[in-house]
Image (cartoon, rainbow, N blue to C red; front, side, top):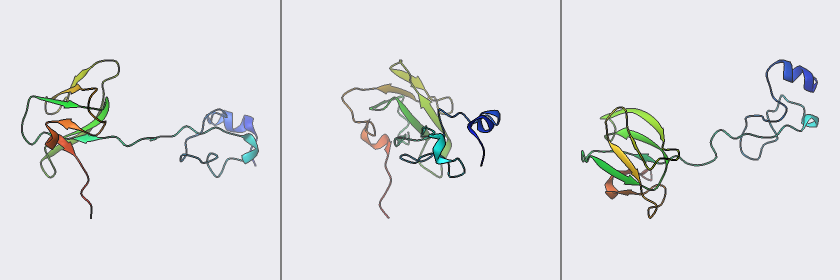
Length: 120
């Protein structure tokens, strides 16, 4: 079993460890080191598309994926983060996304631009 210093020398921080939400760290790391957990995805990232070809889509999220048109006519799925700004342009399809506080994270205006999973 490795010591905390050995993990540090491998570049593994004792303060943070990637893993699933609620896990105690990777299974190969001894539990007595008490590593914290830094989750890689702690929320669902909404996806939006622009089949209609509108120039502006208002959305309720500030972090999202643009897929262009609906598959199979989509462009590479791009993660966009507005940060402190209120709008951002997709570098592939040039759609302007504008944050609207009155919309829920996965909703859009026009509503057909929100890409929702269809139940199987």
